[in-house]
Image (cartoon, rainbow, N blue to C red; front, side):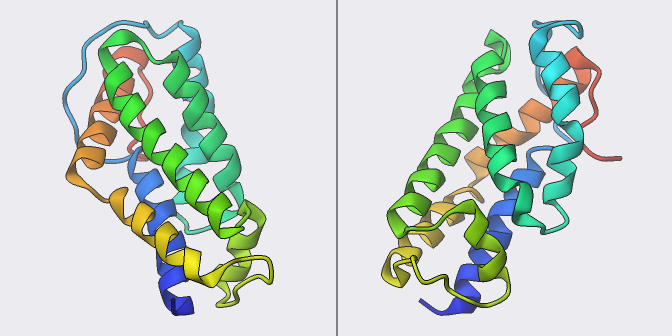
Length: 160
């Protein structure tokens, strides 16, 4: 696997996750309420999702943990969309682990270096898993979450 592909994959992952906080979705209905733990945690996470769009992967580990927590807390009417995102993130985390890649290694990859502990042959599997995050199913789930956040929690994840 060429190093630029690894960099492109890492950036794709960050931009795709940032897309979970962007878009113009208009679905979603109300449960959870703006005072719920889910809404409070979503509001706290709002800024960290935007940081991913800058291409800085330093906070990716924290963002993944936040996504898992929000998926666990999601109210019933948005639960399935969060499960789609959470399952995809689980798959990426497993592919990273299989390749010997830690979140702290992503900065090196962004600089065009493959860390010593990383199996270059397994980076292709990671790239394939990251590419799945660009699917229309994943994008639709992201849009639904953003619309639900705006309508139910009064949290604008679009960054605008």
